[in-house]
Image 1: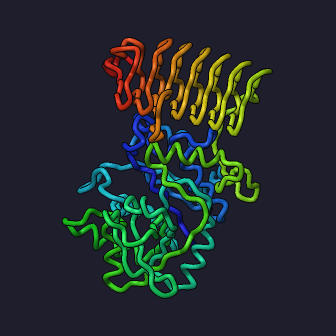
Image 2 (image 1 turned 120 degrees about the vertical axis):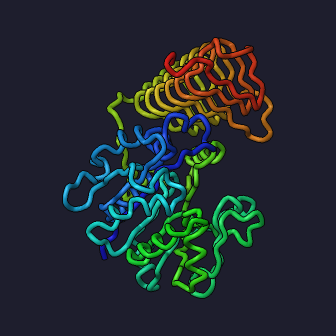
Length: 418
């Protein structure tokens, strides 16, 4: 059966704070060299699905630049599928996508072109490795109208997800989106296999309902269950993380640094593909100490540096005497001498002057300090745990040399001055 994958990559990602101030969430760097969307794309090609559409909306420019022709994923194809990116366009009675189902419905004339049998709908902002072909075979064997992937999550986190109730043979008997009091911990992963003709009718019927929020979890799936349609849950037991918050983004990186991580980036039978620029090998000088960390190409680590349980993206430069722990530094950050960084996420091209302290102090709740793209931390300034520094912040934007936990510093310059 012919399958077309549709990756929803339009999320604004406001809960990722400064990391999505200038890019869409799926384009955020992950694990040093990758982007978040690389995982969904790589799962597709590793599952022998080479017909992929990406539906984008919010600040798609870095995503479009990253995907390009799709060559790194073997998706540069003209006649046998390939990858295409669609963004909102001006048409009668159309506008910004109001929900996941609306994003698919507005592009459905493109999605159903050439009449695929199955539509695989994916989120572009989850970290996991999954064989979609196995799920498709499950869908066919159960003669399902819809198959959704599900996973057990900690009950204390279940209110963040759609919660699935199951009957015999994994048939879905109930579905509630983000309940305040979850009836179980079986969560919807946002991975769907629809029969194309079923999805076509469902989306059109939902489009005509003015009271609908046009969302799969809130509207489409509960309606299918109410109508007695054949909805099944495909059980998944591997690693999966919705990196929709700074805390979950940081936690997913820390998970990678365990001695035997659940997400194995080194599995040569399931390669995570990406587009990456050419950089020289990492240069780690004599006397530097690096433990339980990922160091990308182009990094320079001077003598006397100590790095523990951290991830450094390409081109990070760390000068002598600096100490970095439990932190994530994105591309081309500069860390001058005697800087201390703890429990922090530092975005691209941030510049940390000598002697500053970032995220250092008593931190029983594991608060994450974030520093935005292109921002500067002045010499010997102190950012307490949980501080947020916006994008393009310069020394004159700081009211004082100690920024207290929970404070947010943003640039006071006008856009044309940046």
